[in-house]
Length: 201
Image (cartoon, rainbow, N blue to C red; front, side):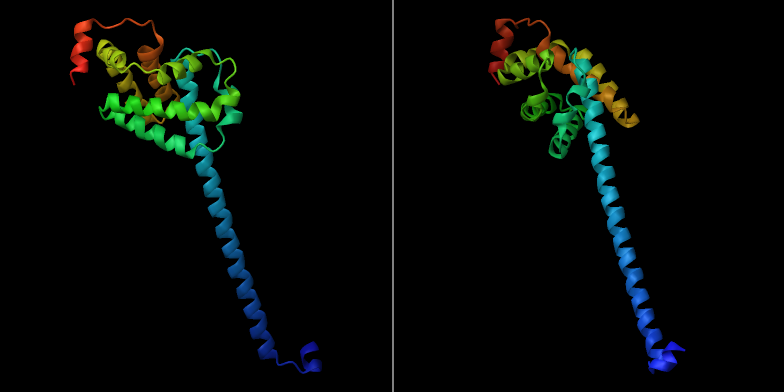
């Protein structure tokens, strides 16, 4: 009746309404896509952060640290780059490039220390580890790797199995135990002939 009285062409109006409806549906679909994309991003970030938290939880246990990962949460922030480097280092170790992977980890912990610094009060073992990494004795590290080769091999096997099971706390525990053996246990200096042998390379 309204259409008849105003003289608006019913067919034209129908097309207009149809066009508006299509635009509305397209816009709704576009917004829904954005929502899904944003949800995927948040899910990925949460997954990455969870990986790092579990890894650090096990790692702190491995180096016999008394404080817990919960005391570090406020300092973790955006750790995407750190996570990528950690995964690369672990991959090197499990593929047999133990020394190269460990030295990459040493560099990562220097970076991580700066990020975690405001939260490190009371982290005695972690701080000792960082101090040892900064004053690294390469001959001693090579000696320790040779000295603990069997134990390191066992821990790497556990790390490989844990990666397959996606048990990242056990991955961190294994890495922590290896670094404890190499950097935090009592130092036994190698004999001169070993030192001279290593320096010869």
